Length: 205
Image 1 (tube, rainbow, N blue to C red):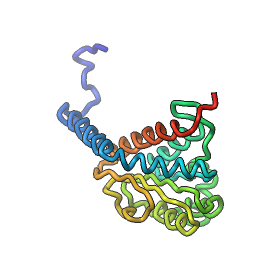
Image 2: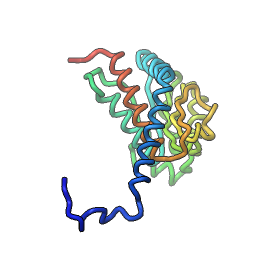
Image 3: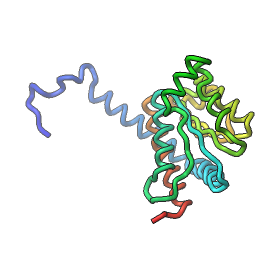
Image 4: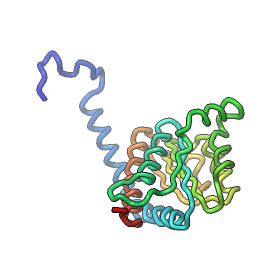
């Protein structure tokens, strides 16, 4: 695509090429951090596969962009990633606006996930948490609730885990405190795990 000199950088403001290059360098560094965690990614995949093979359910939560990460991962599992595997029971507790707003209004926003886990969760099910900060109070409350039910817990977080560090059975943490970089890492985790889970379940075609 070519532009006239009058069109170039019309809306870029004070963002220099050096700043953009640094953004890309930081993104590459985060991907290298994920790459170094591949053995842990496989352990997490094994745990999820074992739970799914045992007929257990996955419940996924997050706030804001992390809520969309939860929905994305659930969609890969209920739908498919590469192969047309059988539908897998994954539920994003972030997707029902009616339930979320009623719980936030009638109870407390810190309990919007707890109440749903109390309604649906069973021993052996898995709670999957996405949090860029690792400090979201409603997610921390959900972890406590899941553990009291007898569910396994898995946390994806930046900020080296934040307050969620040491609170879950399984975790994949990124050291970065940059929300954009953490979200990019979470997307890669989702796709790596989807690849491994795909391979564990035969195609239905």
